[in-house]
Image (cartoon, rainbow, N blue to C red; front, side):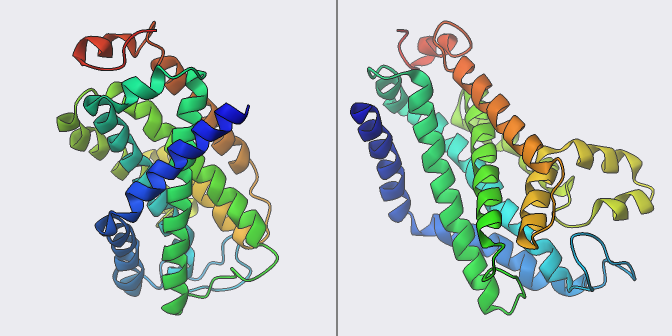
Length: 273
């Protein structure tokens, strides 16, 4: 157990040190959601019309509504960026060394997932700090903060596990951009990050409404949104945790050299054990 914990901390520490040297990565992670908060929200302040929707008990500005969705954006983009890092490490040979270490394969992947979640949460915390400085009215300094932190952590792990699963199937760095365009943008825009589900249904966009309901990212955003106000998130935690376990289990299966990941050994991937 001591050896396993040392390996886990070494992998997490490596990712933290690497991130600390990439100043542009933090800047890009903050600029993207802040532009949405400062510019996009300014033109859609009346998106709710005359209705008050859960979990809010009164009228709120649009920037307050999309703030949890923008936290989800930070978590989503970093989770997908971790997929790129996995593909890069695999092509450079680092994953070969890690996956042939005398430790269970799932433990190595869990350590990579933990590192991704830590980086995601640090970037999300930085975004929330700037959002508060810009005057966004969020109840972060209240009794609901632990519940929100739990929801954000589970969401970061779920999106990191999704990135881990995608890294199994992305064989080359050249294929990364195209694959991400079919993952990031549909997941983000077909969710409740920018508008509530009832707005989609009311507008007659039935197919978008049902896709948003089936989107696990929707439940991640809703869990954070409801936890922020101390309301019952319903099925959202179960969907997020179930997706996390499913994606991580499939990623472990895919990285097994006897199964999905074995073909990568011929491309210079991890050697079979």
